[in-house]
Amino acid sequence: MLKKVLFLGLFLLGLVSPAQAKNGLNIFQYPREAPQDKFYNQYGGKVTLADFKGQFVILVFWSRYCAPCIKELDNLNNFHNKTKKDGIKVMIISRLDEWKNLDELKKFLKRFKASDLDFYLDDKSKLTESFGIFAYPHTVLINKKGQEFGRIRGAVIWDDDDVIEYMYKIKAQHGQ
Image 1 (tube, rainbow, N blue to C red):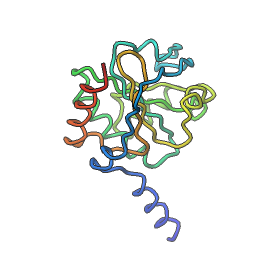
Image 2 (image 1 turned 135 degrees about the vertical axis):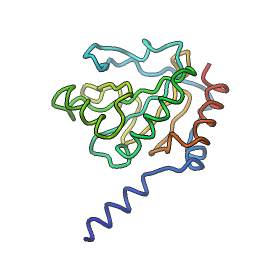
Image 3 (image 1 turned 180 degrees about the horizontal axis):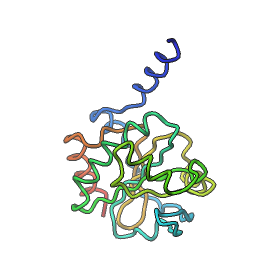
């Protein structure tokens, strides 16, 4: 019983409210070039972040073993569906070695109502390490020039109207 209570407490602590998302967002004074380590797309092809220049990217690093990450998937999927026509590219990336194959990952995303998300796989955590990310979930914001300009540590209630409106504001101010 104690384990369940402890797990629930840690799980709930990992969620970020809309107000915390705004406060937890760290916008850099100066954008910096995003790392160009190769990673895999959902079709098994190798890509780099340079392949997404010209797009405003919300890149969410996550793990299948992270309760807040899993909790975030459904509302991140909803956020994606609400904003994809407005020039916001949502990408989720997890470690390649967490999955037996792509079908397992697809089934996992379907189970947690996130099958519309574009997913990517980080081989040997090269991209994750290049960004200096050590905890999940961790969101990196990338402008159209391919520069990282901000981060959010922790899970976000992405499909909250206040968060959506705030992300549009961030895109307008920093996403170019």
